[in-house]
Figure (cartoon, rainbow, N blue to C red):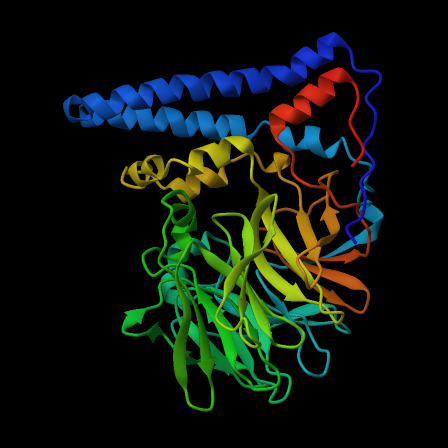
Amino acid sequence: MRPQVAYKPLDNLSPHNCLLVSLPLYIALSLYTLFAETHTQTMVHLVSLSKAMLFLTTSTILLLSVFLSSIDQIKIVSDLFQTQKLSASDKHIIPIVDAVGPESLAFDPHGGGPYTGVSDGRIIKWLQNERQWIGFAVTSLHRDGCEGSHDHEQMEHICGRPLGLRFDQRSGHLYIADAYMGLAVVGPEGGLATKVATEAQGIPFGFTNGLDIDQRSGVVYFTDSSWRYRRRNYISVIVSGDKTGRLMKYDPKSKETTILLENLTYPNGVALSKDGDFILVADTTNCKILRLWLKSSKSGIVEDFAHLPGFPDNIRRNLKGEFWVAIHVKRWKILKWLLSYHWVGNTLIKFPFDITKLYSYLPKWRVCGLAVRLSEDGEVLEILEDKRRNGWKFVSEVEEINGSLWIGSIRMPFVGIQERVVFHYYEEMDYFVLMVLYCKGKIRRK
C-alpha cells in the first residue's frame, strides 16, 4: 500500500512572503507567453532572419533557461513535506586522487571492492584493510596522457570511459560498459579488458552505458544511449530529443548481440528483476523507468514502470528485489518546458559552443543528491535526499550492501557511504497548484 503523506500546515505565511513565492511563477508564465508569441512570429518570418539574429535569439533563450533553472523551485516543494534530513555524521566518503566520476560500483564474488570506473579510463579497486585505491583494469591499451590531474574529457575516446560495471558471480569476470570502447570483460586478475561487442546489426555503439547480468544464464543486458552522440555530448542527447538509443543483450556462450529495444530516448541504467521475468531501463530524457517483460504471457511488452522527479541514471536491485534509482538532477519546470521544444535544442547544438560545458556551469550549490527506492511494482518506497547539500550531488548509482548505501557520482571525486535513512513518499504536484495552496496557508491531506 502506498504510504500516506502528511503535509505541513503553513499558518505563518504572510502576504509579503506569498508574493515572493508567487513572483517566480508569474515571471515564468510571462516568459512562456512572450516566447510563444515570438515563436509564432519567428516561424512566419524565419527565412528572412539572419544567422546572427537566430544565434542571438536562441542563446538568449538558453541563458534565461539556465538562470531560471538555478532558482531552486523544488526546495519550496520539498519544504512542504515532513521528511527527515540527512545528517553529515551519517555519511562517509572515500576520496579518489587525480580523477573524478565513480559512475558505477561493483563488488566481486568474495565481497571485495567496490570496483569503479573513473574519468581517466581506469577501473580501480578499493582495499578496505589498506584504506587505499589500486588500479585493477583498463579498457584501452593507449594510456599516454590519460592519468594525472587534468580535464580527462578531451581524452575519453582514447583512454576509454568505463561506466556500468557488473560481476558475473559464478566466473568472477567483470563486465564493463565503456562509453567509447563498447562492451568489454576482464578476468578476476584484472589487466587489459577484452572487447566482446562494439556494434549491433551493423551499427556501431556510440555511447555504451548501463548493464546488468542474469546470474543464472550469464547473459549481459546493456544499453547504447545513442549511436549519434558520444558521452562527452550527453546533454545534446537530451535537448535534441535523440531517439537512437538501444537496449541489447550479449550471450557469452554464442557471442551474439541481440537488439531488444531500439529508437529509445537516452536509455541509461538497466536492472533485471529478482526472478528475471522483466528488465528495467532508465529513460533519462523523459524522467521515467520503462519495463520490458522477458517472460510470462507479457513477454515482449514494454510499459511505463515509474515516473520520477528528475533525470534517472543507474538502477540497482537489492536483496529484497526492490530497485534503487539514482537521480542525476531534479527536472526543474523550466527545463521541462525547454525539452518540450526540441527545435530549440537542435538549433543550440549547431552553434560553436559546447552545450555540455555550459550545463556544467549550472550552480552546483543548488544541486542536491537524490535517489529513489521502488518496489517490484514501481511504487515509491523511499526517497533519499541530501536537502542540506552535504556533498551528495549528481548521483549516478546507489548500491545497497549490508545495510549501507554505497553512492556513486558521475562528477564528484569520491565514493560515498550512507547509513539508511527512511523518507516519506510524495508525488510531484503542479507548481501552480502548490502556489495556490501555499498562499492559502494550508495543504490538503491525501
